[in-house]
Amino acid sequence: MAGKNMNYFLMDGTPNGRIKCTLANWTGVAYKIPRIKLVDCKNIDYLKQSGVYFLFSKGDGDRPLVYVGQSGTRKNGEGILNRLKEHHASPKQGLEDWYEAVAFTTSNNIFGATEISWLENRFFSLAVNANRYEAKNGNEPNAGNVTEEKESELEEYVEYAKIVMGVLGHLVFEPLVQNRTPHNTECVETDDNLEFFMEQKMQNTGMTVKAKCKRSSEGYIVLRGSVINSKINEKTCSGVAKKAREKAKVDENYTLLEDVLFSSPSAASMFVTGASSNGYTAWKTAEGKTLKAVETSEAEEL
Image 1: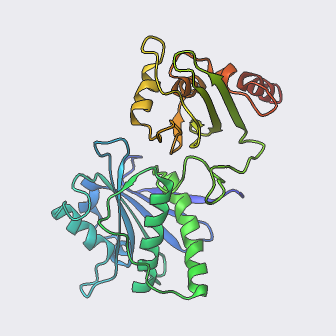
Image 2: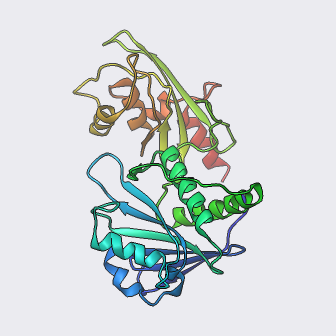
Image 3: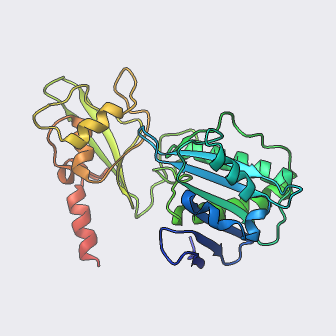
């Protein structure tokens, strides 16, 4: 992907305050607004337009929470901002404990009711499919009807908005594993995204674990479809791996039903085996090259 030129304005002069974001060759305008700063937004004209917004909460479970909403321009001349005010005054409309909002509109106020309904549905679907955040909308938003030409135009808007959202700190649209082919657990392998394997018979259960792992910019991902050990060794399995196993979704054969991210390869391999494991030697490419050997070779090429 080609580089992108992005413009950020720290509206309060601090990185944890309000941020306005625009992108070269994109008509969109985005705002990141801490809830406590909502009162300072009353004079922002762009927020009086139609658009789509997101409310974020840290939640109490395994994943953070997101609510996807939309707002058209009302007779009183207020759009997105007025809707955010309603969420602030009546927290049960959406997310009760939201701490931050991200709003998307355009520099030329071209979104009508049809466009924002389609965008709300599209963003909601992307968030659900990425499975990073728990989407807290009561029902799936209605997509409405748009022409093929308009859908193509809106998809382009969405692609830019996904980039902006990620840079603003929310990977709500980004699945852990990129380039996975639809309806398949297999991934499209690229030079910088090698797939690693582990196959080992476990003495404590007699099971043969078979797992796949990929590196990412965030760490090491054990891929869904991997078969993990049914038991753990309480003495040698790390706390991180134990906690991940408690939360992991598996079927009756201990086949992993979702991707799981770890900060180290050893935590990933211990998650699979349920016991002490050195991930740098346990994970190997299809050719039998260990992760340690791969990373050593990469370092030598620098």
